[in-house]
Image (tube, rainbow, N blue to C red):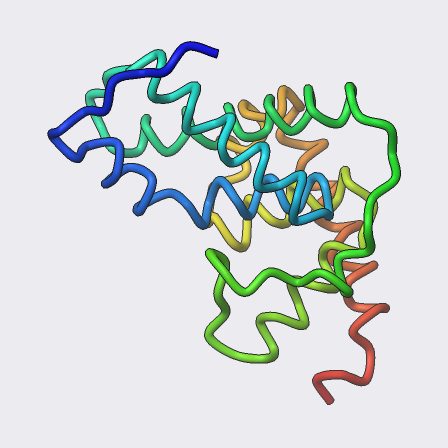
Length: 165
């Protein structure tokens, strides 16, 4: 493997620091395995470093990183046999951190949902993306995204029943 020269302007460090939780969160939500999420995290930022894309707005950089994380996760999961460790046993302490135990419980419950509900709910609630943006990133109709969110919320409600009463 070819070693890449280190950049001295610190811009890659700033991008990693700003978006580490976003990229890692998407990878972990997709793979449900910290080790695999770490690999995807590295692949996303290595791709960013190699391509050195330029953006007019920070929102475009975030969208590019999210889409790249989704694509890298998809590619990774297609290559790897499905023998993942349950997320509840392997909840990461870093870089994802939660403001409360309730947030951690909600995230853990979210990761127990089928993948099609997990990703739309994660992008909507944790990354605060609008339905239209999610539909573009996942190449779905906005109505499909809304329906998956509705069904995912119902599953979450059932799983969390009694936790917040």
